[in-house]
Image (cartoon, rainbow, N blue to C red; front, side, top):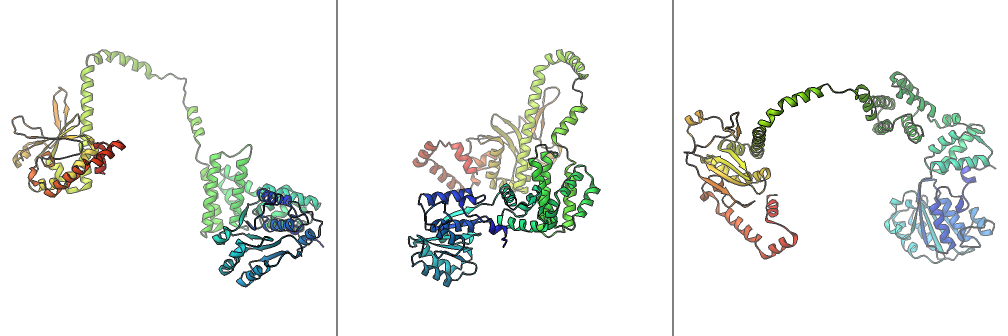
Length: 577
């Protein structure tokens, strides 16, 4: 009687396992050296060899030569183990025997010694299906079973197992079987069965198995029956309802030629197939295109096509219409071909430019240089000085405007009062000079928010900036109408004289008072720096500042500053932050 290929070619030795070399080698060495644990856990994809490995392991423990890494296969223990009738190998399906009563029966059975072999082996398949109570009942026995008891647990979902179970077992993770290993195994089976085949057909079958050897062999059984003894690509494609790879290749030929009509017509031929299967075939085609020795598509184009395919899978996941998604994806791929790569752009530019031609302006520029050379030599120092002063004043104006803008951002009222009552004079060698004519409510507002103004000035001009203030007398309305607009910088005119721009110049005869703000971040004379009377300072603020200064002079703080190399400037920056 014929048997299905998955059972007929089930591994009987550790060397027969496909794609699990690390697992088989570790268990074989443990058996050979008699280094065995009392409990093992096998986890991995369905059809990856977990149950087969457990049975081979059990056979190695009941063989007459036990423990051995190579069961003889001829003794009574091996034969009965292969036939599934050995008394000391208890195999249980946890999916149908998941209650605490079933586990109690297993625990009761562990009390009795093996009847025939040296060990008593319990194989519990799909162990993650056990109930919480069943797991709790198994814990103690699993941790300290009798010396003759071995537990082998198998599961496809180890995450569902309690941590107490995982910690009591040696965990072997079965990896997904490689595509090439599956194809070679299919070739080996078909050669033994004397069945002809096309290699492309085996590639499709192996890809449809998704890494599960059992699923792949089941599909191969179907293909052998459907193709009447010759496994061809055409018959496999028809059997599985898959897309013929030749049609995918033809579709991409239309895409590369940017033939929209032909590409859309090809999509209509795919309406009988599942859209997700077509997208998977497109991704497989792109993967093969990358590994080709002579690629017909540039790498950047392949990368864009991959992005389009992944986006299509996301649309299908959200429930979009399959034909619409496929059509949209193909049109997006054609659009991706419109963008030129950097190499082609450089080549196009080089082909349009004649690098051998000598520029005609070279001679003219040389003559101009010769003509203006004497004039430049005569006025060189004056011109450079004028340009330097102009650039410097432009920078100063920009900084002052930035100060006003930041004040407006912080508070429109504060920025407006500051702009109307405080005028820029100059900024030289870290000294900022301005003039102030604030009175009444304007003066009170600027007093209240002086700390904000101070911090913004330090951000713009530097932490060590000193402030010199010219105190202006408030002007009458008539005088304000006669005076030009407030300016903020002085620029030299054509005659070398300074023309004030951005502030109102102060008369030499006009009485003025100067206040100099000292120190990088300590403003003891905050009110005087703005041209205000110091009596308006609140006593509480002065006390807080004094307390802070005394704390900074404490011996422990001084020692800390010395150890970590912290200066007063660093502390001022941290205070500001």
